[in-house]
Length: 72
Length: 148
Image 1 (cartoon, chains in turn green, orange):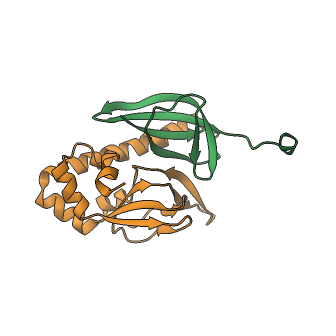
Image 2 (cartoon, rainbow over the protein chains, first blue to last red; image 1 turned 180 degrees about the vertical axis):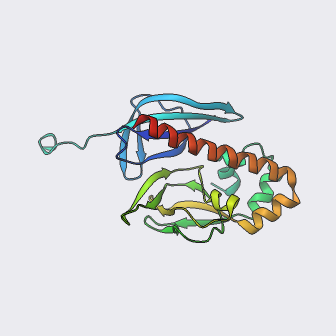
Image 3 (cartoon, helix red, strand yellow; image 1 turned 45 degrees about the vertical axis):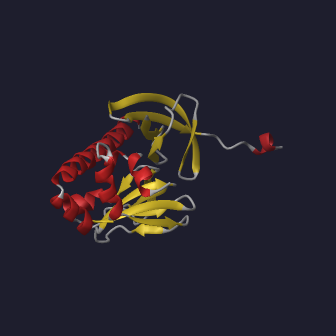
């Protein structure tokens, strides 16, 4: 099964993406869209599956860059 | 990954058998791009479709203030340039490569149209799949609006 996923970024300030995934995304997974990394917060089906494809929406939010204090 | 393996991972070629995929593979041209390469630019004439075999591209559009920024990123198995294939208009956006060694399969409009006219069974499946892909992109856009 191939999962065609529409990734939408919370807040609308950053572009989302569309990618094929070999495993179904889950809440908490990280995904790379362009130069940034995001974490999945919500998943839903966008269209019924057809043949070898499932069609999903995932809402994501940016993974926060570590603060200088965290880096040490 | 060869062109047929890449096609099997793309919704655009869903429902085609091996013989039909072979015919499409024969008119596909493989290209590998560095990060930052521009595949086509907003306003260019639409000359074909691009299937992303691996890597990632950004779809960039110019806003009313003249600033260009990505509106969406497309990864493996996605298609770019299909709107111009359907309507013959100029490119509505630029496609800029994000990942190094991004592999693209390119089919000219001329070759694609000739194959679809010659093999109407392929033409029907491809047109249905292009419509489904455009529908998916519209749903992505409308979901984006409702979430934000």
